[in-house]
Image (cartoon, rainbow, N blue to C red; front, side, top):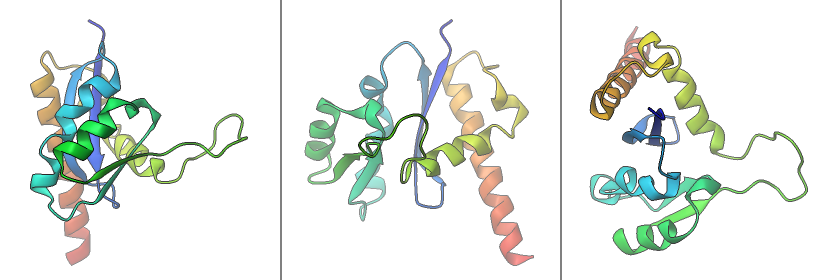
Length: 138
């Protein structure tokens, strides 16, 4: 088994808008259509989606045509930077993935099927959002 990849689209607070889990074999840009499909229908006010360089190429054209004008913008590092540098807006997704690391069941790939792995990611985000909601009213 090659492992799993988790694709998530998050809002500016880091909460998930769309989640997909699949085999790690295919390239990110080939599998991103699953996570991006139906995004504009579920969130009609969506204007722009930011992505990293792994999602370049024909995916941008497909997303623009599929959503009737919504942009898939690639976040690129600042020219001339060497080594690790935090990229603008990229930390939102990385923080969301870090939240998932707090769940023992998601720390490794224990699931047999991608659908059960996706279900546990959804459950983890549900718990995260409920905990935030409880803190607001406490």
